[in-house]
Image: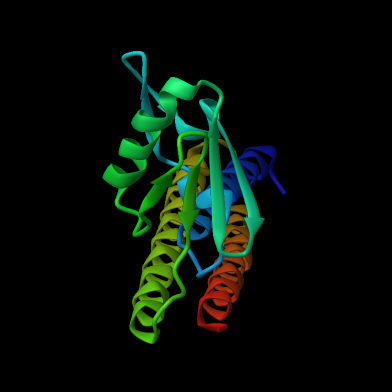
Length: 187
């Protein structure tokens, strides 16, 4: 196979890896009724005038399956952290006891589980769309190689390889999505 086509395949695969990582990260943020520090990813606290990630101003622990403990490095950060969690609207009310902030994850209702499964499917579909767009871009780049001493057969072979890689990554998204759905629906 032509080196130019191999490079396009490697680029496409690297981009698809990034898409899978992003999809996994988004799926992790969807809570399944169990406490996980990942639920607080994406929450930013006003730290002396600059927006700083919660994990950079406090330690986050899960003492049990239903509780998150947020312990700020500085005591004066309790109120800003509490405010940031409430503004993030993650469906959990923080309890500030003056030392740590306790977040008790409520059990999921059947209705909420169904909503979360829909959200998982939407996120999985976004991941698949991203992967298909990467496939389309890779195929376009491979077709542009026609004038650069690349034969039609090599272009067809390259496109077939891109499709094989795409199929593998779509399957990965499906597996992650199914695992998350199973996790959510498990009572």
